[in-house]
Length: 518
Image 1 (spheres, helix red, strand yellow):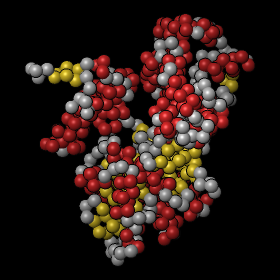
Image 2 (image 1 turned 90 degrees about the vertical axis):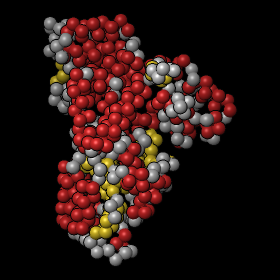
Image 3 (image 1 turned 30 degrees about the vertical axis):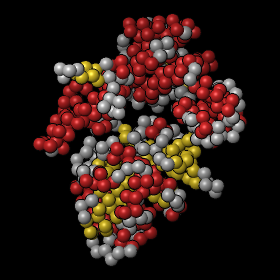
Image 4 (image 1 turned 45 degrees about the vertical axis):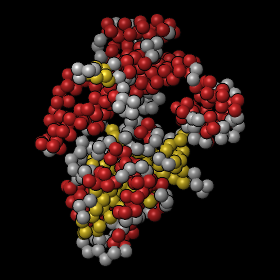
């Protein structure tokens, strides 16, 4: 079984029935994911006699007691992401490749997100991916459909490699069909348990949504997708529809749903769109150029630090995927040009053909690479040699470590000090000679009043990079001279790792640059 089930690798059972685990065969992520699945399986067993909600609540209480005792380990091992089917997470995976990074960690749980898209299928593909991700993560999902009937909606889900009937049988998927009334003589609501076909009356639509919500099985997380707004605005006056949206939003939020509102941008005037944006916690906009090129931009997200760049999007067999942005494109182009035999022209072609990150390049088959104009047998061989070199492996480790430093600074900017500290520790675990990680940890420890450990971390940073010595400040005589925050202009002292006024975090390089100017 171990040969076919990777989850069993490293597990041995002797003739006496005793079980042992060789942890050398497992990564930390393997262990966390496996033990989380085992724990969730035990909840399912308990639910047979106690019911889903009671079994989950007892498990939740048990986990929280352990979490409170070992909070730092929970964060550093990313246990919250996996255990209890993601019930402890603050952000949910969107299901759209590259979007979670743009959002700064995923979709905030409990929020209502407005998705604006042009005529065509792209916005619905986005919405289906969002729902599919929820189903795969064990969420209870409510879906409305107004551009096709419930059969067409399920067929669309099936095209993205999921079986709707599996989740319907478990009570985790309910559908509101607000399309069939156009071809059938519907009066009121026809409900077969999993699908509610609703008449044109918006009051019946409200009733159907509320009934479906209450019929869903218990789940740690809940998602909803409503695409009824555009057709409703074409049938009813704006005030009636806005009142309807506010009611559904409040009801779904109260029930713990994270909701996606799908709206066709070109069908409504700017005043209507502005009102819809105001009602939402976040706004994501998909646009299509005259040549058919797709872009995506996150316009707003309450309480989140997100990437506001415009990102290029492509449609694949798996759905929509972000392939580049202003920052991402320049980074991958630079990385590609580090490879011998790849110039700027070939690098741009590789990006154009979907190699938007180095991970995709690592996994590419030779034939796939050579389908790109300019990449012949010699170039593909150079690529293979490079991505399997010690030099490249070292660069990947350093980059992963530095990404954790960046995460740490983001957490500190949001006043999540514990998560910031754990991020710096994770950076050091990955790359012990990351002077930036040691230095930022030193700064954080000092601001928390732990001067002894702060000095030790600083000494370690200077041991790795002696140029950091001038960054240290005398703890007994903190200099009063400072510089202005580049965002809000607030006067910053040397010891500040973030702006006390607007909360933006500063990197070592930013502090060096500003100090030199002073």
